[in-house]
Length: 120
Length: 111
Image (cartoon, rainbow over all chains, first blue to last red; front, top):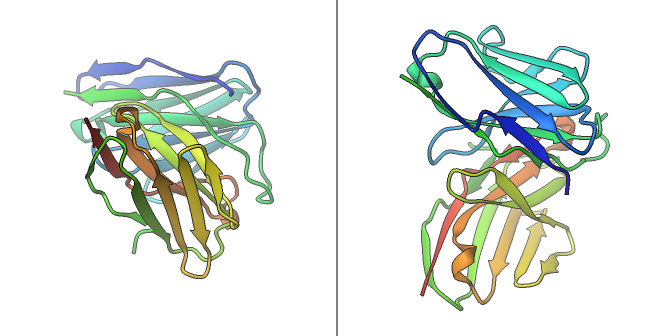
């Protein structure tokens, strides 16, 4: 299957700092990437969908100015958590798909290994 | 009401047992259904897709009941390595390629 990497795998930072997480598709071109957040013992929650070269679409309740997403190339998307606070501590997972869907056919999402963020 | 609901478990079963998980979804327009497996502190991995006619992959059998908006996963001859959280996942087609995840059912297989 297709391989997606994330960097860093874990990060600990002080409150108020910004943290950037990278998501890369290693062996395919990802026209669409998704960013999820998972709190302990909870389900993955979609934060935003990003298509290469366009602005990300955020889910209801997700602050776009706090979670900056950039999808500048077909193999790289970044999520920046700005002015992180302890309540932002979570497991952030990206996924990538090689088809910018028009809503007609589901294409498999390939998940990265996740980034565990701890904000002190 | 949650879009995808699962019994959180845990299900504690001995090796060799048969165990079944159920899941219900609220969006009747949903078109694609999946079971994912997630190990502790890892990303989810696709276990199998779920088709209307039911499908089997080795020891795993998935069933879909559209009328009841119900999905199931049956694991036969449980192995220790089956211990994980099993996520019921739905793609509501009206939202394009998005996935909606259930909170997962924990399975613990013991020797």
